[in-house]
Image (cartoon, one colour):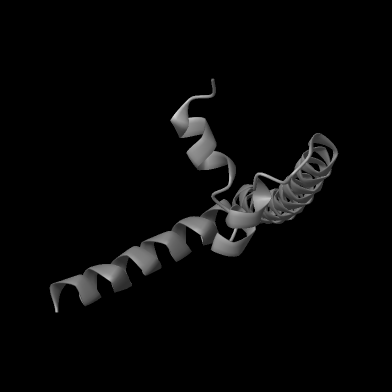
Length: 103
């Protein structure tokens, strides 16, 4: 006999009418099998859509990370090519932030 928690969760995405008609007493094994196949196909489609969305999100995050890495590498190249200018810019930014902080 199936556990009540499994029975309760199996039809959670169905409307009340769908739940009522899902397993009435006139439902035969063939009809029940067809309904289960339909529900399985629907779950598979939903999972596929969710996986596709997750993939797009991860790809976007990956592209953003690569872009930021490229920016850091170009900043490192600037510091290596012009160390004096980089130090002066850093001191200038620090000085301005210090003035803003004290006001």
